[in-house]
Length: 623
Image (tube, rainbow, N blue to C red; front, side, top):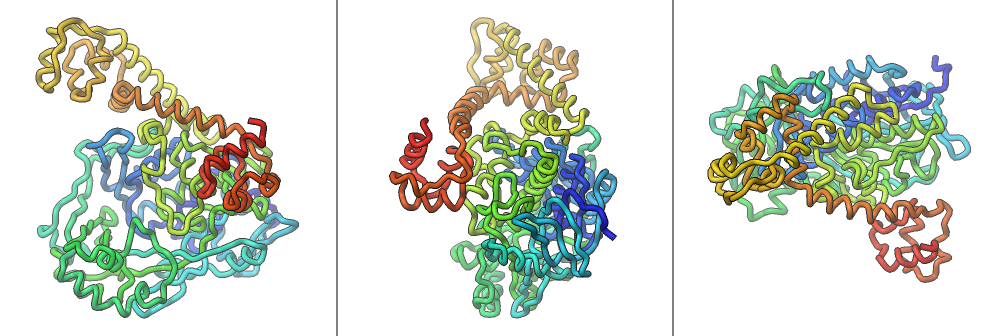
């Protein structure tokens, strides 16, 4: 049945598994994707959206590296917003609402058109090991499938347990069974595991809602898109979301169910996502708040199914029903599905290398919620990197690791490997110390050359990056070399309440003023003529404006990154014995021995390792 030995087996068909399978197959590895249900590939189990604060940057990075998430999002989007536009460009974050059914369909279609990729519907119940290496998997049908590497992306399915009021039932998400056996096999060979929880809100019938009582939340007037490829198009038509609020009456009704809530009666003891708490957690922790926002998100173009963002809960059904009916616009609500919580196994990510290969078992990789993360985007990014590195290792090529100054993906993985996590990890712009460098607008400039060198990004992608950089440089050069007379520019300066000039001045210096934007500059005939003559599009104008206005900040961050990267070049032998170094603190020895950092720079980011400990290591290594 499965006579050949696969290069890579991917266990799980969620966002991590889908990107992992695509990446390894596109790098030439003979790949098998095993999932419980082929109809649910890349299912949006929670909210029907991609991107958001910092998450949008990750999706852009996945796209720049040749992944599929951005393309699928653009093809199935129903609304697009660029968040944080009132702040600096380091904070701008794209977000799109998706058609949930079409999203999964599009993912499956793209995967089925990917060479070197096979599919199999079954439940993996065990792993095959031989002499410290993984050599395959065992399924619920008793079939053993051999492979050179395995990527586990089982999401919330590992011993998944769902909670709804006083009811508890096994499962990985509504309507699907849990995955039993993988955790047990991993613990037998020495892995440490833990439990986490997450939750999901009710889904309701949009026909039963009164949207006139809510606040409309339309998409951007001139929507952009996620993928850098021209094959995906910006939205012409969009669907609105809506916002409404809870009230003290709603909170009081919710409190009546607390004694039956698995969160408060002790049935759930694992830790949930701090930044996306349940509604009962919110009214308990923020008892003085009189209301909380709810965002009403359509699940697609044609479906009546609607997602109640902000009302994640595991309270009993009758309590959910009574409380939600007291929210403005929900007086006659009809439920399609009640909210529930789910507990699942995860494996502390300090047990991984930066390639996402486990330290304990060779050729075994973990990606997604198994590593303690939350969110489609974080999972997809890990899947992409695990798929890349599994394929590269089989081909005896160098590992592909992104540094913290190269990508949010680099920050994500380094945080997990170096610091670990005891609660579901979510990416934020504040986690990235080089966020001015890691903007959503330049992910292609940062990463596509690396992906092209790997063979993952197409020539079309690389050609677009070269063209984008060439035109941006040309525009910057024009601004540096072109002068403008006072009589030309002063009327524009007056309009924007900024000081006039008394003599000719270079456009670059004028353009750097914070009061002006490039739409103002385009009122100058010479600027508009240059843009038209050189076919400068909106993307190039934005890229140039960011370069001009933030050049000082960008240069400062580059210098800081260069200093830190010098320590990245000081490697630490994998078998280094920290207990031989008497001057290290006891905590540092324990942490360094457990995590096994590969460079001094990584060692410096481990909690409990002090600057003096790093100085000791540098001296010990002759630096």
